[in-house]
Structure formats: structure tokens, C-alpha cells
Length: 349
Image (cartoon, rainbow, N blue to C red; front, side, top):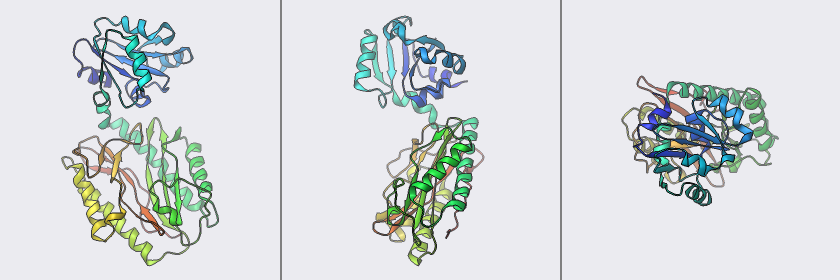
């Protein structure tokens, strides 16, 4: 059963879905532009776009009826016999676009349907996992490359650009997110994107980066030290690594996501750094860099086959620096596979 058929099973007679986010357009149709919408009902599946993309749509989404938006959304909706209720993605549709949709479908009931539309993406199939594995392998290669490139005296931006250039040259379509290169005291910033700060001897350097390959994201974080390391730096690193190992060992089908988060958090807290780990342990990765479910204290999710989730504990000390180590794991019926292969030994360059 393909993805559209699985979605259709959730629809009753007279219902349909209106999909406007790039991630879900790509997931259900394979179309690689956000200048489109999908309309799926129990009987029909339409891809609506404009004249710039009609040929591309026919090539990438051959199972869909292709419609030109120039004909008017109202006419397209009225052509769908028996349509009474339309689910939409409330996380992506602006108020003004929702009003236009309501005006176009005057007799339609609009219903929030983000969860219904996106839920299938939580569990990745084998092909999706292989795509994420390939993207993560490219990230591993980029990390190996940057270890041979980085030097004291370079700026964070120079390092970020080199990472990005390497991944694009090796086939990445784009970056998963803005590359984080945070050195010295700036490494205490979990999302410290690269600046013109010069990397100095004795600095922690945290790299958090990823790429999009064949439509799917990678994500990894590694922290190392330039030149020489203090005992405190070694201590913090060892605690974070132990916390990650505790979480990785805990992951199994049927385990609560919050319990896996707690396994890492308890290690960090017992070492006296509990207040210095403020974010959740991890998030799912797929077409988007942040998907559901997540490892966090507030999560109600249970680990299931097909989940692909990051494991990224950290300790951040303002005025000193910080450490984060991040891997991506894929859960199958057979095992929990760590897709990130880069070394995690304490590195001094």
C-alpha cells in the first residue's frame, strides 16, 4: 500500500486533504517544489501548480492529476464531486491563505488536520532509512575532511564554508540547517552559528551540521579541542559521552521517549551539570530536520519500529564553553542502528 492509499484509509466519504507544506507535498507525490498544493480524496489525487512547473509535475508525480492554478482554485475544488470537508495543515497555512481557501470552497468545511496528514512520516520505511544513512555517511566524510582542514587562526565562518562546500561538492542538494561552528566560550551556545571569531589554541570547537541528499536530511554534532585541553574540558566531554551512551543503551521498541531522555539527563545531573543541559535529548529526522517524535522530558511518544531520532546530550557553561555529541539512530525490528560513524574519542587537534 503506497502513502496516498494509507492516507486515504483515514478519510471518510466526502472528506479530503489539502496539503500545502513542501515536506508533505514531496512525501506524498515526489514533487520537488513548494509552489503547489495537493488535494487528495478517497477517489482522486490532484497536484495543483502553475505554468512554470506543469512539465516537472507530470514527470515527478505521474500518479497525480495535474491542474493549472490559472483555472482558479474555486473551479478545481467544485470539480471534485461530493467533497464536503477538507483537512488542512494548520502549522503551515497562513490566516490569509486559509481565508482564500475558504472563499474558494464556499460550501466546504475546513478542519485542522496537521496530525492526520503528517503522522505517516513518523515511521520511516527501509528506502527512507537508506536515504538518511547515505546523507549521514556524507556528513561523516565531511567531518573527516574538516579535521584535516581546521587550524588555529581560522575563523568559524571559514570552517563552516569549507564544510558546506565539501558536502555540496560531494552531491548534497542543500544544507539541512545553518551550519553551527561555535568555538571557545561561544561553544556554550547550543545554536551558535558561525561568526568571524578566530579559533584559538585551547578552544572547544563544536560543529553541528547536516546536508540534504536525495530529499532527506542528515544531522551530526562533534566537539573537540584545539591545541591543548584542560582537565575540566576532559571532564565535561567524558560526562556528555557517558550520557549519550546511557541513552543509546536504553533505546528499544516499546520504551517511552521521555525515559530515554531521562537516562542521559540523570548521568549529567549526577555529575553536577543538570542545570547546564536545557534542551531535549533528540528529535526525529527525515525530509525535515525536525520531525516527530522526540526524546524529551515532555514527550508522550513510545519508541516504534521506523523511528529515526537524534541522540544529542550537551553541557553548556556560560563563560567557559560547552560540549554536545550527536548521532542519528534508526530503530527497526532487528536492532537499533547508529547511522553516524564518526569517532567520539576525545580529540585534540
